[in-house]
Length: 120
Image (cartoon, rainbow, N blue to C red):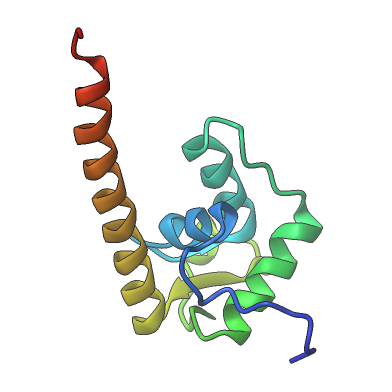
């Protein structure tokens, strides 16, 4: 690992990293579908060109958060060029921890902003 490369496995996760992990939370997926889900879930605020997406996928793989899936869909539903990815147990734990961290932060923010909204 080059000394300037930051690990994707450190919290807080960068939004593209979190959204890629989230895209793999329920099922194995290939790059195009991951990219489409990232764009959809972020309401278009996170866009990944194919080069950026596959560099992140390589980093997530190197960091042990995802792996290439050993099984593929039926040949009728697939393209041999596609590579499918899935979360590792470590990736699942990190996704859960980051989701909980953000939920706790939102809970605190809701309490504080509710106090701000009260008339003085």
